[in-house]
Image 1 (cartoon, protein in one colour):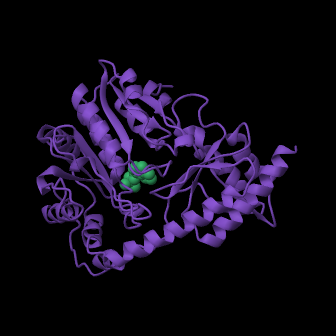
Image 2: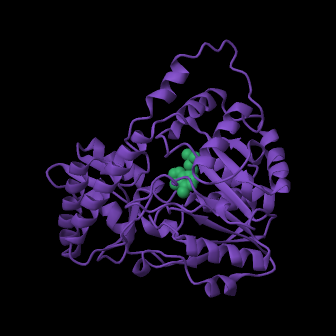
Image 3: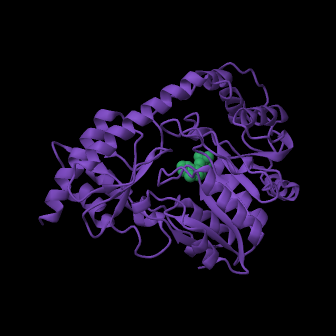
Amino acid sequence: MPSISNKGRHMPASPIRKLVPYAEAAKKRGTHVIHLNIGQPDIKTPKVALDAVRNHNIEVLAYSMTEGSEQYREKIAAYYAKKDIQVSAKEIIVTTGGSEALSFAMGTIMDAEDEIIIPEPFYANYNGFATAAGVNVVPIPSSIETNFALPPIAEFEKLITSKTKAILICNPGNPTGYLYSKEEILQLAEMVKKHNLFLIADEVYREFTYEGRTHYSILQVEGLEEHAIVVDSVSKRYSMCGARIGCLVSKNREVIQTALKFAQARLSPPTFAQIASEAALETPQEYFDAVIEEYVSRRNVLISELQKLEGVKVAVPQGAFYCVVELPVEDADDFAQWLLEDFELDGNTVMVAPAAGFYATPGLGKNQIRIAYVLEKEQLVKAVQILGKALTKYNAR
Ligand SMILES: Cc1ncc(COP(=O)(O)O)c(C=O)c1O
């Protein structure tokens, strides 16, 4: 039989995928599974976006421009201007989700064997994009003890080699919920300038910041124009994960020109989804106010319930809708599987994402899980009750 590639062999599977068969089996047994493991918001997509698709009378669903429709990019630039980010339509490439923006970014600036430093725990798919690009991820640990704040710059500098091309951050963070402060961003900016590196910021959760905190984008840093690359997406912002629209933004012309060649190879981003995403930009601020209020109250309920459990430590998220929780178990992978295979409370159990898959350093995060609070509060309370009872039973075995 012809053989597959080494790259294919090394392509990481999703860290939660291996639990899916156990969740399916639990459901077949009649157990209700509460999903704390997925980042699919249950919030409704703005009506303006759906109406734009419903009311369209397109006769030929043609390709769009490779870089996305000009009208849409102009409106994205206007959206950024409202966030105090000055970019023009020419500095934006519309992509098929933030995912494609991430792979374009890596392809554009990195060759095989180059290194990218990423604070861990990080969004697990970064491993997949890095593997596809032949790039090596160099993790730098952040800690639950500091709420996953930016590691000291000196620690980054210890990891910089002649192969280092970029630092990648996610702000606010999935899975940490940490929101980097302006000071932290400025420290990173100084460092990348000093070492002549790119700084890629995945800002797909930009809107989701809590308690009046404001998001500070790397595109707002003066003097960072040639280094900064932003990855963005409509998926979470407008609860439009299925639209598959995102963008790559940079003021570095060479980056945009090169990324455009990668974009040309896939012809165009989806046409209908751009129509929906363009209309989504008209979403009234009240929509976001209501969504943020909902997430804050979910977060508060979740955190206060978790803090009642003995031996459980939780990093309080300041943004996005995830948190990392340390459990009084040795192996959260085993616990997560056991929850699905061997435990139920009144016909219910929970599915969590073991956090080890969000770390690149072997052994880190072994006793941690990631929870996504994209469920209603009653479900979250019930889920934590189940977790509490399950932990007692699991540790008494
Ligand atoms: C941090 C982060 N970046 C990027 C993505 C990719 O999103 P999409 O391709 O749907 O835009 C996700 C999706 O969950 C994410 O959590």
